[in-house]
Image (cartoon, rainbow, N blue to C red; front, top):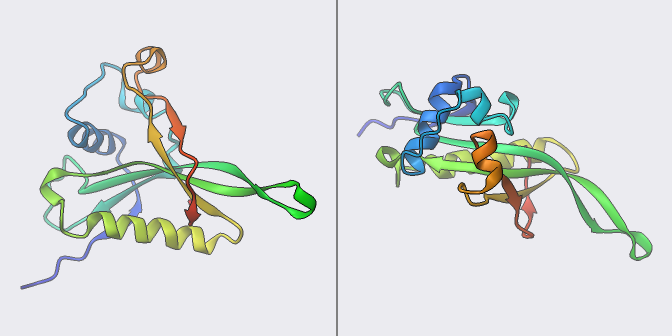
Length: 153
């Protein structure tokens, strides 16, 4: 069996990124243009997995990062702010599940966090897509959970 390596890098195709998101999350299609739907996730924080021979209209997997700060206990019972990479918008296309795509993307994320001294990673989850903000902007609002792990951008 020939191994088809999974490569993860910055996503370069906005429409392909959004098409993957819509496929992963049950074909929810909003009428707003792709860039408007992704407005809360700047291009430099969009990442995608690539596999040779995969469908060119979608990525095998995608994830996004939200730069933020995280308050951690500091000296003298004070809080200390540290850079944090909020991990979000994670999805694997149904045709590529159980083949290592998610593992490759998470490894990529954590390697990038490791390269940025002092940065940690924190999972973020989407709020309800039916909220007022989602309706008004064409994309779902985001909120972060309180759990954290070592990691990055």
